[in-house]
Length: 319
Ligand code: HEM
Image (cartoon, protein in one colour):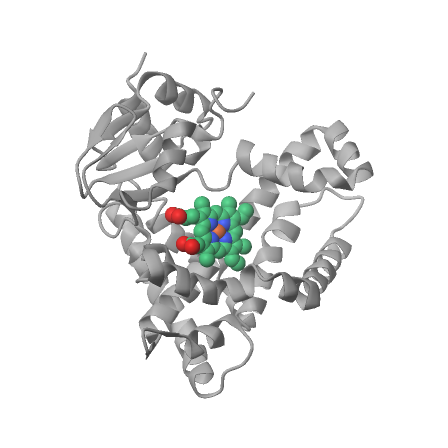
């Protein structure tokens, strides 16, 4: 059988297809292995991934090397400790706020979903991705930022994501294209940022403009990076998560009917969809000191790539 490392190279460079067999082989044969192509340690078992995520002392953000999100500029993803907690709180005001959800967000999102569904050509074959899963999170994220024009830039976010965490092999052409996409987004967001500095509103960019950390305002560069990150984080992930789940439900009509009759199953179905066919397969960390994962010693300053998709199908944890 081909070695796990060679299989992983194929995943990075080719069109990977079904990754299930590779994930199984990695978990069983080499749960923590070094990949020259990704210049990092690849981790696939549930227990190891969980241990790394819980240990923020030994595993921090990856700030340089292949596959880093640092190309957006510095934002909450690249922070630790108190700074991370404080700045995450600004973001949480807009995306994990129960009061805002019940006051306006839920109504807005329900109305939008209904409008999008009403526009689908019922009776004809329907493009659920183009007509629903892609526009929905894009319009919602642009609304959170009060930047309607951001809905016209969907492919730009894709190019940026492709050049960051998705570019684990560090392909220079993909990286260049992503950096160009970032320049385009700077041009889009900068005028809005200037506007909100002088006349803040209720939106996400305004909250960051008014935010302070250690007595100083949050810098323009950080707000730009945080805005680009929100567009990348909120849009592509949700689009893919919904599309993946709908695909399963369409091919399993029994499940679909069960969900229609028993609404209590909605949240577990979403969670199970995220576990079983996730939109994000892997995230990065870097060791802040010498550490170990399972029996493998990992020196300080190493990149660690956590294969969430492999961990979430680990039979040691899930049936
Ligand atoms: C199904 C949809 C989503 C998935 C699968 C997803 C996945 C993830 C993952 C894996 C991370 C951790 C990255 C890391 O630690 O390296 C993350 C962080 C984050 N995501 Fe999402 N995300 C989704 C939707 C969203 C949405 C809709 C938003 C905002 C509108 C969002 C905003 C964020 C933020 C702000 C962080 C950084 C949190 C922090 O560092 O404290 N995400 N997301």
